Image (cartoon, rainbow, N blue to C red):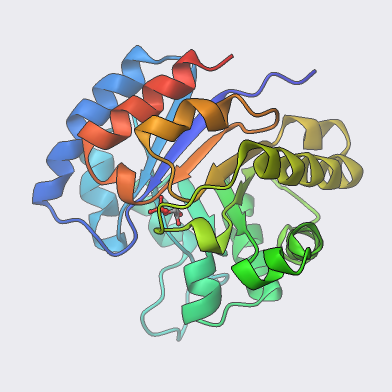
Amino acid sequence: MAVRRKLIVGNWKMNGSLAALAELDPMAAAAANCCDVDVGICPPFTLVAPAAARAPSLAIGGQDCHAAESGAHTGCVSVPMLKEAGAKIAITGHSERRADQHESNEDVRAKALSALSAGLLTIVCVGESAAQRDADEAVAVVTAQLAGSVPDETQTGELVVAYEPIWAIGTGKVATPADVAEMHTAIRAHLRSRFGAEGEGMRILYGGSVKADNAAELFAVPDVDGALVGGASLTAAQFVPIIEAAASAK
Ligand code: 13P
């Protein structure tokens, strides 16, 4: 069986400041202590360069990227720009961008391909709404998102899938271990069928109200290879115990 290192990535969303980068110091120390765990932080674009300079042992990343390398796209940031700022990660297809910026699966696939081609660790986010789960459509919705959003070629970067049920994001509601197991098994089957042995090695993160007190239970679920953490990644006090829970997970 493929050995997959745990990966914990914080998504700061539209939060943070230069002063908040002080939180990275204890996070970096925890990451150094937990050598079996990869740790990243994706702050707003304006903080990527200072974060990468301050915490070289953390993988710093962008929360989005444009599919093109440059051009007339006001307000957008390309993968080469992210890399020049020191980014190692790009998040693509977060449900907040799929909703707020009307990003389609095709948009997400193009962004992910750009990031993968440049060698970034590329997180493709998928997840169903509450109504879709209530209608028993969760696995079908996520499978269709994977089919549309994950590029066929993973290129030089590392593809990571983040399962983030929309109803669990920022709500304090966490998917049950049984629901997470069902979904991560389905995602693994999809990756295996498309990428063979490579798909076995791809990491699948859970995201949605991950906190210090529920992390260990989630990390015990088969095919949960780590977490994409929103609110609890903003402070070291909340984020470090999640890193430690990943380090203790079997
Ligand atoms: P919360 O951890 O705040 O629920 O956010 C999850 C998320 O959307 C991470 O990308």
